[in-house]
Length: 344
Image (cartoon, one colour):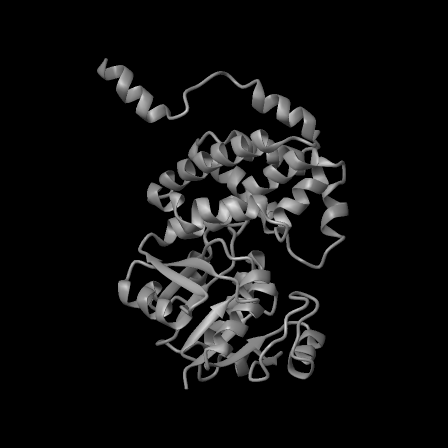
């Protein structure tokens, strides 16, 4: 029987573990919290991170990382972004060379500004770098766990690895696509959290659909612009990990990032918001990383900049909106317009 180890018992890790177990795979999940592991094993639920979902009895949770990794063919890393490096260091002496490692967390490491497969490659240097596969898309754990039809994309430069993960995870209710643009797949999943925060701020201020549509559309342009500067393929941002994930994260009732943005728009502080939930709001640290990347690469990202200033510099949300609306006039598609005007 194929063995799958899931590293991280948050909502997304638990949902994927449930899905794999329901396919008849041998699945074990690593939980940092003893009480979470106990609940999964005894009550077959994870009320802390995935409430209201019944888990298969075959799904086993452990707090010993070595036990979860041993003998597995596939590892799914689902810990919060800023913990990936420290957990990967613990994994390093335990990981077999023929394992395929699927990274499903969405963010950028704030200290290094690197994607998570880059972090994994650094911490597991003897592993085939192409065997680190990124998964991203419009996938709220709450819906995937309830078998609501969903789609996702897996990214790696080597097709055989992508197709192997595709076959592992695909089901009648979970459609999996492949994409060789691993950088773009990861950036889409990370950057959309920043724009979702901004969309939530717009909602919290009481603005309407026009405002959110403008933010999301121009935000997608920012995402693709930074992606191109980092070597990603622009069409990836029109796909599931770009436009798809941005749409669901900016609009869904399940989105922690949109929720945090609404709270900011209604006047709460970042400290008040983050201390009120056990869930990690990935967009907060990702905003720090993206703001620094944009500065380093000299990329114009006005929505990201204003979001950063609201989060970390005390800018009032209403003043941030005014600054965005009063920016110097420009073209919607600057590269196309510049080429056209030069031709004329």
